[in-house]
Image (cartoon, rainbow, N blue to C red; front, side, top):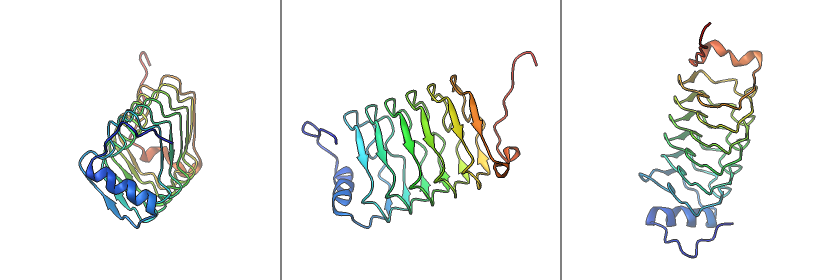
Length: 188
């Protein structure tokens, strides 16, 4: 997992790491910047956070984070603005465990240039995502939104700067008209 031999976690981080290790019933975790900027963190297993329903902005600018196990986050419903933004080494995210996630803040997965795959099939309750969701994910080539049946609000800069995006898959239920993203092209 992660080499933490030279890292001294804050009190808030120690609490969560203990919860992870002990399979605790943590319901809310909202320190101001928990686990943000952890440049040595490469992987995180959240399987022990089965009761976690709300987190503030966490895991932003963890530049070496390549893997996040979301399978245990089945009760997570709300996440703050900066969740997983600036995670420049994150290549894929499997959201199948995020079955109750309904609201995510403005910068979810913002500026993750190595992200090539996002499995949205578990995001069945996702209704609101902030303005910069998936912006500047320059390696993302395709996005399957067929599981996003409840998505009603996505901010205006959704997918901005995704220069490699070639395919956006959506079912009839997606109702792109509800999504506030409007693309314009020069000269037409």
